Image 1 (cartoon, helix red, strand yellow):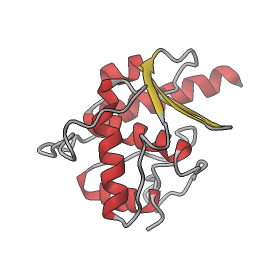
Image 2 (cartoon, one colour; image 1 turned 45 degrees about the horizontal axis):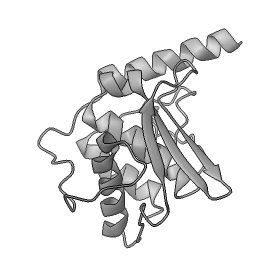
Image 3 (cartoon, helix red, strand yellow; image 1 turned 30 degrees about the horizontal axis):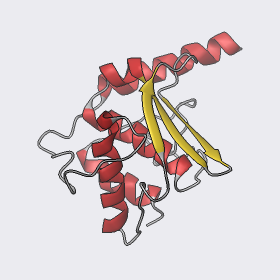
Length: 166
């Protein structure tokens, strides 16, 4: 059973990485250049900034520095896991798998970072909602079901609206 789950998770992650549509001319890091997040890998800064910006555009004020969110890019020992969030008892720590990060497109990196921040900051659990085509309707999908991640320009705003409860 464990081997089947690991294979399924690996297959889904491979599908996520290989079939994603990047955001093309979308400018990452354009929101408030120069912000530095203590205890956060610099490669994650633009995604943290964009998370705050997307929240603000939906009328939600989030300050990841004030919340003392930390984040790293390092190897995660569990096969097929792109990211994790450790939170509770005044801890909020995002880990993104290094192998995933090195292969993923910009859009899928955003998807995974926003997913983990959804856990750490918004305290959201996984949500396995699909449309009639089998596509995931939430960034908070676990990646362990048959739901198809189709995070692209045409679906991005709707998925981020759902993430922030708009």
